[in-house]
Length: 276
Image (tube, rainbow, N blue to C red; front, side, top):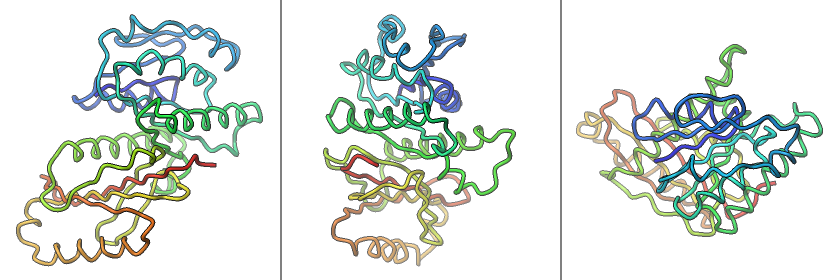
């Protein structure tokens, strides 16, 4: 799978993905150096980044297949995201991972730019120009983590975001021993991920979606427990039946064996609507 990071936030998350061998990393930013990096000339604002977007065909030569395009919406360089996406959309199946900052802390010009980027990329997904957009709120991720120190703040948030996305990718390419994850409907292009506490039956999404119409629950359970815990089957069935009370939401789940001592749960949530 390809990971393309655009801008400071996107490249920081791409660096986290590089810790896993399953990903091929591409980074695009101002004053960036190193393998698979494209150095963009500094521009004075989002309009200039958009109008002066370079050809990346040589940089992306040979790129194909599943691709996650990572972007932080408030950075000026995000204005060239559509130009970059246009240059890979014919060879790649593209998911956008959109990191939304705390917009209350942005200046008015930054707020306006982020709002435009946020809405345009969702419309891009709704028009089927890309496969899907994953929305992640830094504020929601911080709430899940609890107390986060100032030094290393974004590193902690990015660590949880990337580890969660990575584990979901792993499980999506494995076969469950119980249940089956359904493929979301084509109209449900706006989505997020989150943590599911198996023992407490608690969900913590990385973004608060309006009108969720589909959810998928992933149980990562140690093989020893899968063999020895006679109550686990009944517990999972009971939890999933409790999720089906709302007939407007389609629910699926998968139980996957792991080598870990601790059990892990993840959730994917999908909406057909542009988020306000």
